[in-house]
Length: 392
Image 1 (cartoon, helix red, strand yellow):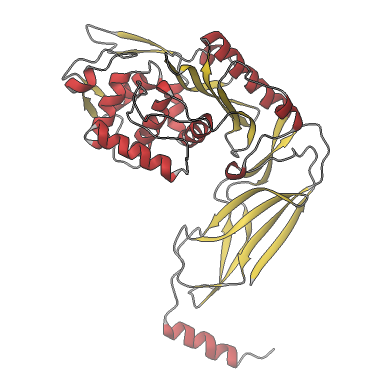
Image 2: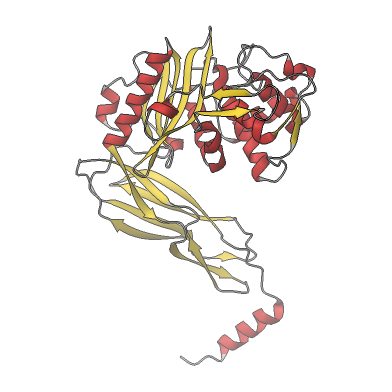
C-alpha cells in the first residue's frame, strides 16, 4: 500500500500542458499556433530548469548536427573534470591526427600541448575541430573510443534520434541528431555551471604569452548581442546549413533554443532571439519546494532509526504561463507505508507528483539523503521487548 500526501497550492497563470521533459509537448495554444522559427528545418524551445517544451517544429527529425556535436564533447569533458578524472591544468598533447582536422580550428600543430582549460576555450568559442579531437584522445585514448562514450551517454539520456560518428561534427556517414535530442544534451551540459565561463565569453586569447598569440571570437554572436545569452554552440556545414543551440537566462528562467537547417546566420540569430523573447515574456517559474526543504518522512522497519526525513535535493519547480487564470497547482508525495532497512544513500524511495487539475505536469523522483543501516538483533530485541511493557 502506498501513502499519498496531497498538498494543494493555489497558483494563478498555470500553463496548459506544462509537462515534464519526458512527457513534453508544445505548451499553450499561442506557441502551437505561431511558428517561432519559420526559416528552420527543425527547432525546439525548452525551459532548461524543468525540461518543459514550449515550442517544437519537426523536433525529432534526424539531421546532420554539424558542430553542435561538440555539445556532447564538452559534456563528457566537464563530467571528467567534475569527477576528478581531469584537471583544468592537465596538459593535452596534439596528435598528428588531431592536427589534421579541417574546417573550424585553432591551428594546433602536431606535438603542441595546451591545458584542458585552453582546449575548452578552443572548442566552446572557436569551434575547434582539432581541439575536439585532441580532447577526445586525452579522455578516451582515441577518438573512436570517445565516440563510443558519446553514444553511450546519448543512450543513458534516453535519446532516440542520435548517433555520433565523430566528436566534432564534420560530415560523416551515420552521424545525426535532432533538435529535441540536442536540447536534452544542452540541458545536461548546463547542469555543469563551469561551462558558462567558456560558452559565455565573447573574446579571449590562446597562446597569449607566446610568439603566436591566437585571438578567439565566439562564433555565437548572441553572447554579445542578446541580453542574458551565455552559450552554447553554433554549427555549419553545406549539408547541415546554419545550426545553433543557444541558451539565455533572465528573471529566474533559463531557456534553451535549438534550430537546425537555417538558411543564414542572420535568420538563425533572429529566430533564436525571438524564441527567447517568447519564453521570457510569456512564462514564469513557480517553485514547489526549494533545495533543502523538508517534504515529509518515511517510516523504516528494522533500522537504527524509525523514520527518515525526506528533503528536496534540488529546487522543484513548474513553468507556468503568465496572465491566464487556471486551476490551482497541487502536489502529492507518493511513498510506501514503510520500507525495510537497509536503505542506501540516493536510493529511490518515492516521488513528488505535481498536478494541474487532474493532469500530471511534473514528476520528481525522491531519493534517500543518507544511508540507513539495518539495526542489530540486540537493538531490535530491546525495541520489541520495550514495546511489550509500554503502558498506554
